[in-house]
Image 1 (cartoon, rainbow, N blue to C red):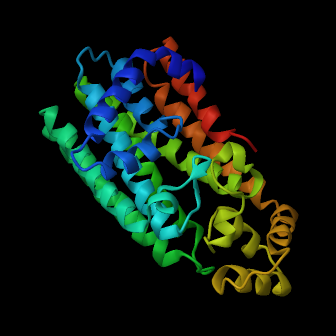
Image 2 (image 1 turned 90 degrees about the horizontal axis):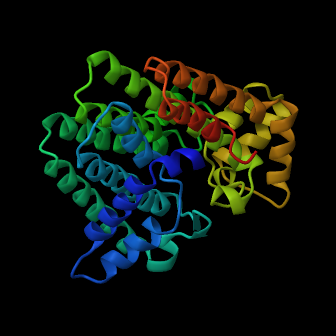
Length: 322
């Protein structure tokens, strides 16, 4: 990731300038809330995909900067909304905006950032870009509702969980990569390759994130370890452990996840069960399998240093701090 960020350093600096410009408002609370999240760090993986895809495809204009900023605004808006829905205390290792400013400002500023994203899309003059990213925004919202429906429900299947991942996370990854190719007017085959790369990378990213909630550290994953467990989220490791559980273990998962009656020591017991059934390593194995599919897709492009960087990005996404 560091090498890719260095390659795109000038473009990323231009994206930061665009974000700062379009976060501005005559209502002071708006840039305060927006900057709290947007300037809090993060690896900018999604806008990096747009910048890298555009450069990989030979694009020479400036609209990739606008689209990368739009992608980051869409992502930031969903995070502001997510933290309200989930009641999260941390985001990117710092107090979440809803904790600092309250739920109402977080929701409203999220709406503001969505609006700014659409303004940036329109500035490119591309109906195809507008079609892709507007459809993606709707898919992300559907994913949020799907996750709400499946939350605390141990009857959720792995296929249903994957559908949530594809809508909530992978859709923006795939769109971010594809629009870079759209700007460069590449072939339909190359657009499909970029879309596939982003989709598989996004699925791998979320599966790894599911595992990190149990195996990661708050200082490096930007949230409290065990947040998903405490919120009763049904993620890939839990589904794997529940499927392999005996009656006593299933009773534990029903109490802690479905009924959310949690006691001291429950998280540690959950970790023991997950490790007993190889659920964390299983989720990571799945992430690596999707990562391999992402690598196969990007290798349809001619060899180049940038293609190698995108190949390496898969390793960063899958093998973050476990």
